[in-house]
Image (cartoon, rainbow, N blue to C red):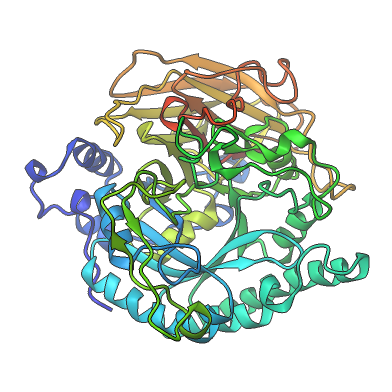
Length: 558
């Protein structure tokens, strides 16, 4: 593999005069973290949140490292997916244009891909890495989960990365095995669900044995079809929480409902489905919509994501492009040579330009949806370790340049703990949530300079494992504080005191451009001004942008 270079914004040999405004802004954030140059290239790996050393009297408190945030997308398709159309080079160039530091090509599983495409794709991956030494490019797979939807599965680069994915695809993919939901009644459903758990455990064993350096799994568009039940998500997580780390908080296909584009029934994310015989019956019909572009499981304060967090266990959220076909793009799939098809080649013909807009729902990688991962050094393993540790926040429309979150004990001068971490305190201690925002420094691809209007603090009690594994509500989670930040520019810090009672809790953050709000799904007492669905066919994504963060846990000890 070609020697990895730092991104332009992180490389001191690159003049700041050659960077755009956001690159300069990101370089400033990196300098403030003390990670510029060699300190970033060679610094220590991020330690998982659960291994962070405690400090303070009696072993209380916490002291996480300073972080730089790498921007990425774990859900990108190419000609090695049967329903996409772009070459690796096209996708990688777009990722560079929109400021991504890392990306995952996760092609759809099928027999053509497993038998032919995956190996060919790996050669393309190696070529793309050589052509883009300032990007981290992972090879992955979009796994059809037995009895459920899809997942991103991706491995660290190494001798066995493609072999791991191919073996996994053939042995555990629901589509290839015919292990789909509702295939033949309750007995097969139970078998299929068990096979999904077995698959995740198998990946964990490949990591433990050293066959691959690392591997991660994230559930994709979890409520799009309503077939990812709460108990299945808990079963996947519990099978190997170091492998199955979370889910898409917001799906791709964010351009699906641009007015006048796809049709009068279009919804952001292509969340245009109704409950089916395969859907979990406990989800309401509203669960199949997006709210401010985010999946109902994430956007509902006190909903499914909060129900998972209220057990006191991290479950990371992400966002991504799911890029297959970019809105307003003029490329179309090329024609097949005689006798060839996807099943016997594992690859679509390269696309051709038509100079006429073609159908599409997606944005280019990094153009609209961005997942920010906190690291202490630059590299593949650092990104994966940052994702696992939960040091993650996400935004749409390039709403923010930077977000730094810390929870500290007032009596401790340390840095406290950050996203995904745990702060240990005693009842009655004084603690403060510090939220440092760096506002957008440049216009996005729509020509808009985004402006953050508010920051919401969401707090939930931690009650431990649930008895009902299909429970999807966290009744003690609600918005507890909102700061109006309209008109504020540059970098500023919000200081929010947190009350410590007898019960452990978590806090997470959310904010938006303030354009579209309404009463949250579980009522005004829980969420008075949350994201709301748009009217079908009228979902301009650029006019309704949000950021979300992972939680920080506060463990109250006696």
